[in-house]
Amino acid sequence: MNLESSMYKYVFTVFALFFVGAVSEAQEKVTPEEAIALALENNYGIHIANNNVELAENNKDVLNSGYLPVLSGNAGATYNRDNITAEFNNGETATLNGAESSRYNAALNLDYTLFDGLGRFYNYKQLKEEYNLSELEARQTIELTIVQLLSIYYDISRRSENVSSLEQTLSISKERLARAEYQFEYGQNTKLDVLNAEVDINNDSIRIINARQNLINAKRDLNVVTGNTIPEQYEIDTTVTFLNGLDKAELLSRTLDNNVSLLQAEQNIIISEFSLKASRSGYLPAIGLFGTYGWNENNNNAAAFVAVSTNTGISGGINLSWNLFDGGGTITRVKNSRLLLENQKLLKQDLVLNITRDFNNAWTDYQNKLNIFDIQEDNIKTARNNFRRTEEQFRLGQVTSIVFRQAQQNLLLAELTRNQAKYDAKLAEVLVLQLSGELLNVSIF
Image 1: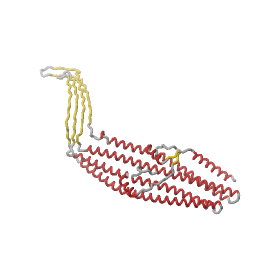
Image 2: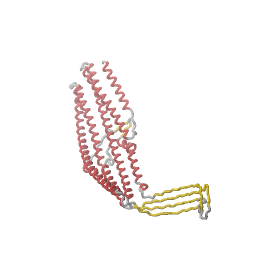
Image 3: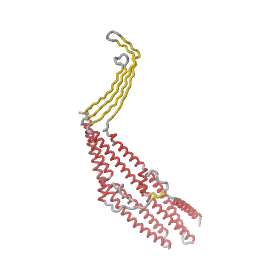
Image 4: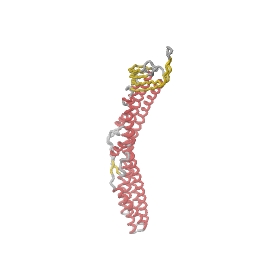
């Protein structure tokens, strides 16, 4: 055997040992359910969405409603040092140098709005609806994160199966090289068959290297979605099951009732209605109560008739204010609020059309991809049978290595295409469930 063949064998032996050592390491298996649980707990986008819900909950609290009174306190002190010259009616005069006086005061003030034209009433209701909207936005973030996660997860599954198929192809190519070298040594074929086998092994090895690198990159993408909580070395579950009994008409009905984007549009309409009602409050008067409890002490200088005076007391009242005309500001706000409400209704109508179209497209795409997967399953059976027969004929010397390689490549292509079709169909199913609003309500595994 020549130096060139020995070198190839050495390279392939090192490659094989590296591969065996890599896969022999204990690796944790992460299921789709576990990945989703990690994302719900650690994904930063979901954390931000949950914080926004909490912000909206704080805003809708009675402490932010305007229904509670305002209690304020104030206090003050004043000190005077004066030079005074006083002339009395009887003609006498008095001069005081450095006459000191001081004043102290403190008060508690209470203000309460009894009626403001129902403005705060509708604002309070609007804050509650904005909280509901924030919950829908959080749900949308969760749904999109799950779809993103499953897209990456099934991409990893596909790439994992592709690597297995490529490894099997490389193993077959190595057997072919060993057979070609054996036959060459005994004069049963030419050196060209050996060289062709070596070239094919090199190509198969390069494809595996690229496939493994792409698999590693995809696994890192999954770790990002789950908040970097998965160990660096892990395996995934490549088992895929499809939901049986999905009914298009039923899912379309649920889409129109439960699609998160449509629910958000409806929530925006409700918020706009309250905003319009709140803007109309400017047409009505405002009535409020006020009260004060105060304490005052005056320490006068010698020129005053009273040396010290102290008084405490309570005062209160009711006030009414009414902007009979505010320059047209209220009229403008009402008109704009009415137009914004109309826009929200139009947006929902447009969204219904688009969501219905998207669902129909997604459903058709799902059915087509299921059919393609079934066809690819049948195709791979044919490719395997063809390869086995070609392999048997190749061992008997009835077909050339070129024909054998073509059958090998056809089988590999069928396996890669089947893997793609399987995960494409599953992702199409996920998108149908997302559009129908059922993604978080059913078990898809």
